Amino acid sequence: MACFQGKLLATSCSVPPPCARIRSDSMLFVGIVTDPGVVAAVTNDELVRDVRLRVDEVLAGAVLVNSEVIVATQGSWLERGHSYLIDAAGTDNGRFVLRICGASGEITSEPIAGILEYLRQRRQGKTRTSLTINVTSGDKIRHRLVPR
Image (cartoon, rainbow, N blue to C red; front, side, top):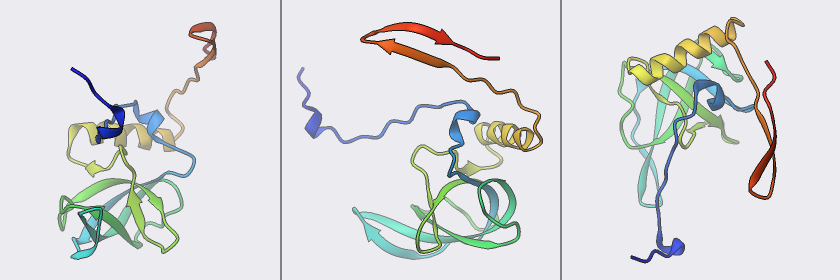
């Protein structure tokens, strides 16, 4: 069997621990869908919706509680009246876009509940963190530093 990289179209997302999901520009918040939106645009043969959410809890980033935000998303999985953890990036036009392989999902799902617990503890300064640094030369790890 032969495979040519130029012909493969796919996305694969690993599942990193919650601490690895937070980036310096992360916008992580819990919001309830107030308007699931209508199709706003078609890009790359995908329907893009502008979904309105009321922000109930901010976990990272510069979003205001009780503000209403617009999240551009593909598909119609965000349902009116449901609460979601949103992992988004801001755009120049004031909207948010969901991160590819991000932590967005309904807060009642088990994986999202675990992420929420971590983020809430982190906000209170109750989480443990660590840093691992690998120094490589060629294909061999020369030093491994694991500060505690």
